[in-house]
Length: 207
Image 1 (cartoon, rainbow, N blue to C red):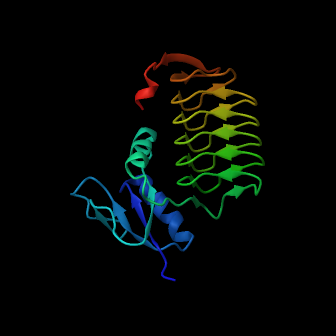
Image 2 (cartoon, one colour):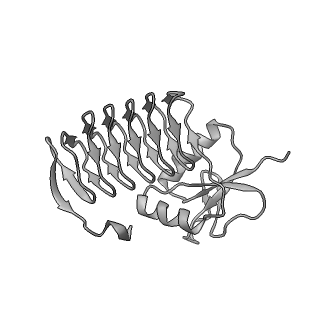
């Protein structure tokens, strides 16, 4: 049977990292797709503005959570692949949704559920019994203790820490280095140690 080629939607710095994970996994990359017609090549792979024809799988290699969600809605007929770096540590009792990437140095412990099209970025830690929603981005070196819940589309900033049992709502922004010791409502932006809410977006339904 002929192998399906992988196409990466988003020719960016994030796309470079995704491509190298696919390379390590020995997945054949057909190229990148990007809306910018001026980008012709990335990491020696061709870049096109058009979706591939024939047998292929996609990965959305864009870091912006809102854009990833929008694209998955536009590309419902496409097949998406999950990419797990060989130097990550993933419990066999954890579950990972389609279109999600687990990068180098990541640890995911037992009975954790990771949604679709999420990003577990370099060296982040997600402990036991966590629930990570679709389109979430957990940035490098962020640490989530056991039983943490993170809602759809939330961005956990680089180096942030979340204590056990915390519930973080949908489409929140947790600032770099923030220490989260209380539950966070939908749409909130939280910064500092201890984390404090500085803004709440009441229009999260528009994401």
